Length: 197
Image 1 (tube, rainbow, N blue to C red):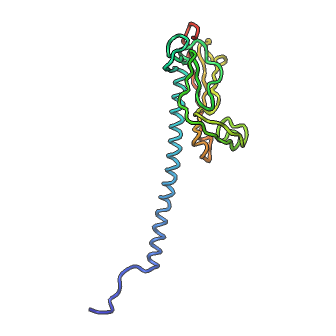
Image 2: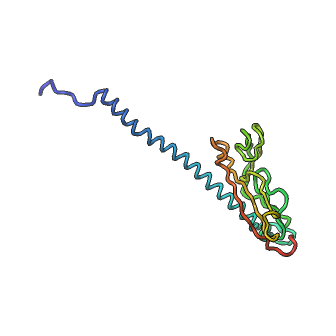
Image 3: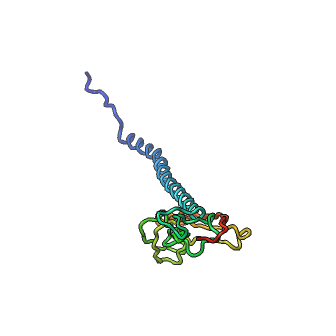
């Protein structure tokens, strides 16, 4: 055996070049992975907005059944489709739906109250009037629900409903809080001929 055997391995320069090349390959992959997480949050927020809009529109249009009885001795809170006149008054309280019919009130899909501080006009919530204003939020209804039973009505039998849904969680932490809000419009027919209970 010869004592002059050449050692095998990498030099420090080769290791540094290989590390730099590996980092150049991994950097775009890590950036893409972080972007995918952001996309995932955006998609989850949009899905939540659409789900809450469907639930709210369903209750306003079709009503709900409760455990107690109303004026007509049934547990039905009649939606617009089961009424003679469009609902009047405020349809939200602290950002949650508050729908009343047949002397019953439905307040679905609410959560524990949280305080949201406005950062600017219409940010992070659509009805923020100025920066520093504090709002108590218990639901997803971003602005007062509009019910138009006059100018957009057909033969006084249809009602247009304008609805704004806001994801308050995403709106607070997003760089673009308006992306956490969607506006919806729909129309319902008043089908009841007798007086509303």
